[in-house]
Amino acid sequence: MTLPTRVSVPTRAPTGATNAYLVGTERALLVDPAGRTDELDELVAESNIEHIAVTHTHPDHTDAVAAYAAATDATVWCRRGRKRRFIDATGIEPDRTFVEGDVIPAGHGVTVLDTPGHAPDHVAFEGNFGVICGDLAVAEGSVVVGAPEGSIRAYLVALRRLHARDPPTLFPGHGPNIIDPQATCERLVRHRINRERRILDTVTDGASDVESVLDAAYDKDLSGVRDLARATVVAHIEKLAAEGRVHYDREANRVIPV
Image (tube, rainbow, N blue to C red):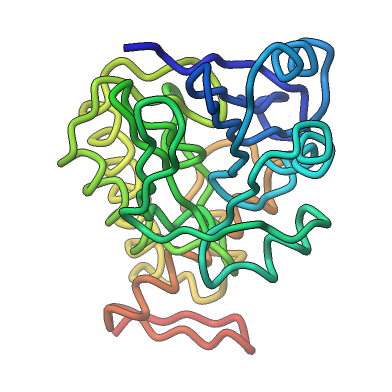
């Protein structure tokens, strides 16, 4: 078994970098080429890259797709039903599309897993090495799941499905490899449930608009990340509203308990 080769690419991500991965040596797959660097250029030049794919189309995962597609003449893949989104993000049309269960013929075979939540087109790539999981999980901290794109309900389902698969290792979009995937999935689910409980408690206690819920639900300085925290609160409120636990008026930005 050969583990994916990881190259850390400087990006505007909160961590300051995004991980690009190369799977296989012959007929290799390049995942999430977030930008061009000397290290990634060298790896690409030395490898027989036949496939390029991304876990999702946020800019910090896609910015060098077009450049490496041109340099390698590789087959470029995207999630079926998300072609327009992929073109808008990368500036090029994909050659092929995939759905869950499809196998990209790289390495010993890489299987596509649907893992929406962080983004609606989010997927992961599973091989005998484990799972390249994009922004589904991180070794430390938590993942932003923010409205209008993010779905807390879908994210929790994706985490629980990944937990059930029990891969040996997770290869995330940011930060180090995750060597305890099940414990990490449990931690991230617990974090979201605790955040939801806190948000629901603030609404029950009288917070009636998103800003007041945000201020009450977070007990830390949000300087520089308030927009992300607000988007996360809205995503949680949308989940609670879908479950009939609160009433949410998006236009008026008002939320009340049921």
